[in-house]
Image (cartoon, rainbow over all chains, first blue to last red):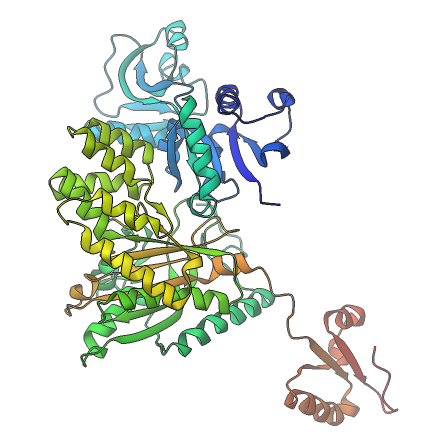
Length: 207
Length: 394
């Protein structure tokens, strides 16, 4: 038997949309797929093995080659900067990275502080604006930071803007739009080129 | 930084324990023997070089260099690759006569890791350089030798992807008008960002035909049919030379009978500026990173004051070992346990066995605390103990 294609999937928000897309592209995924708590799911019909991981780790699995392919948000790819092929924009889980803060405020002149889950993206963005900022890395509830005085601004993903609004924050700048991407390990991209090309082709048709 | 524990090593530095050492040596010998059979001569260069010379000439990114200062304040680097030191030696010493130089090496190189583990910062490369030969035959020889050496090392499941740095550049310059714009687009290929590549192409003010040519470029992957497809993409002969080189390369590889290991992939960009012609990467089915790479680097020698063409390749021994797995059979070690009364007999017996090529440990029995553990470690244990006759082997 040929070795299965291993696909790293992000748990949570993107997962359902990604599964829908794969089904639309004609892949037979079993129904129990959707609410399984397993971390590894083999789908014999398609000769796939799915790995369910935290979204920020998908690119890591793919870079190290323990997964041939993966579905990862562009936000993760920008932050992690992994050596993987970004072959297809799946156009799912659309949102954008933005700078937000309390309304009518200015950043501190001496040492502007930015709280974010994306230290690299944030640092690069402000550097390109000619602004030297101090980054404070947080892992969640980023909106808290300006309210309680930890930072002047936050850099975070915004999908509907509701969370910002409910916490009394406003958007100052949009950094970049984000969608999920199909990523491929460089060796798999060459060794398993045929099966991967087929997958890219059938996914392209339903995007 | 917290105080170091005594067992700690710098990030990415690894020990080689006996079993791995033996496997490594076995594989290295297989590669070296094959390279020698093709007439390559091994050389060694120092681990430390000047940053200004080898450091800046190297294809390795600046942030990956280990740097230190010598007593005069010069910045030194631990050599990040072997090609630039060899280019230095070749240009300054060896390239006296007007014929190609064939050199080989197997040495450790050093590349600092900023991120998590999983990648060694010091690893061995076994490779060759063919300096002073600008022919496609030399490019073909690199690929054929790489295939041959890997097979000699016992690897069967592998593939080489071949690209041409000249073709990509020519085609892009032809379509986009100048080198800066071509470079911008090549950067996307180098970063492996095909989504970004397509978006960038769409954003450019190009005719739909040119735009389609750039999109189709990403599909130039596969067997010899890629050559025909590439010819269709070019106009006015620009980039044609590169395609003709690839055609010639394919014929050469056919003569070497290695085409079954080869695929073309013209979207492969291993480095932004280092390679100047045919280049390739080597993949093994079960390893997530390339196990080797190579190509033509015609502008490197010039940095050391000799303008001549050169090509070469390097196999990463650590990754090749990962692809091959550990050796099942290692040479068994036997043990003679003796007490002082029979030391002379033990020495003579060990000498005989060693002469016959066996690996023999000679161990004073009073130095062993746990006899069972000792007997388990060796393939065969002979006791030459006490004044009476020989005890049976355990």
